[in-house]
Amino acid sequence: MFRQSLRLARKRNFGLRQLSVPPTPITLLRPYSDNQTIRDSRSPNDPAQTLSQAGSISAVIKEDHRQIEKYHDKIVNSKDHDTQRRYQNAFVWELTRHAIAEELVVYPSIETGLNNGKEIADKDREEHQVTKEQLYKFQNLTPNDSNFIPTLESLMTDLKIHIKQEEERDLVKLEEALRPTRSRDLAQQFEMTKIFTPTRSHPSAPNKPPYETIAGLMTAPLDKLGDIFRAWPDEPGPRPASGGAGR
Ligand SMILES: [Fe+2]
Ligand SMILES: [Fe+2]
Image 1 (cartoon, rainbow, N blue to C red):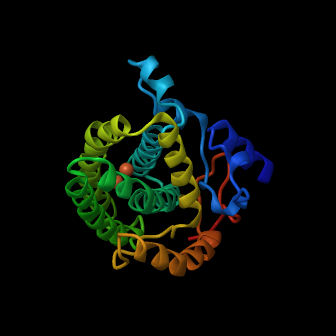
Image 2 (cartoon, protein in one colour; image 1 turned 120 degrees about the vertical axis):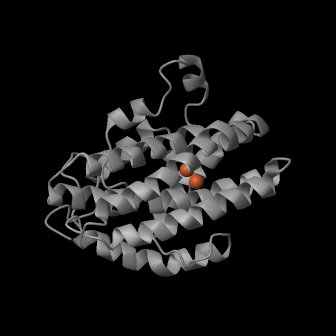
């Protein structure tokens, strides 16, 4: 399993061999992943842009966005509560880590690197706060609750607007302001940061560094302990240790 996760990381060009931080244990990586996600994150209409953005901060963020959307679709397209529960855990896991890593790595770069960066980053943080509150509500619901799907759909309606804004405005401007090597460095930082973030929503935690970092360090171990006992989608790839009949 460990070798499998390392192969996956190298395949995604995270450059782990150049980093002084050792590769993470398997239980801390994405619950599962598949090659389809990587393909989905690329624009079929613009292969040249896809190649130029390979390994960039835009590429890794878009890949996460597609994964979050995929988990959402799996939940709403299933009638089976066990399947919904597993994808609910994956959705919360993916979105929580993604949001915090953006706040720690991407938004500070937007803030300092763009002309109206502070305004953009503050708006993004505000939208994250709304999402985290919705996610907190959603993560505590069970699939047999009548509010389960409506809560997810409400969250996703807002999140899709945020994602579109990030992909079509924020990241475009950020890439224009960054050298390609800096963009790839940010992408590595983004992926490494996700290893250490909490994996469940904590809307009361601050969303600006360095306080976010401290809050994350405090809550992340408990979240990760809980992950061991949660149920995960039954798909190949890395995932927390239990991957079975948890909550
Ligand atoms: Fe975001
Ligand atoms: Fe995002």
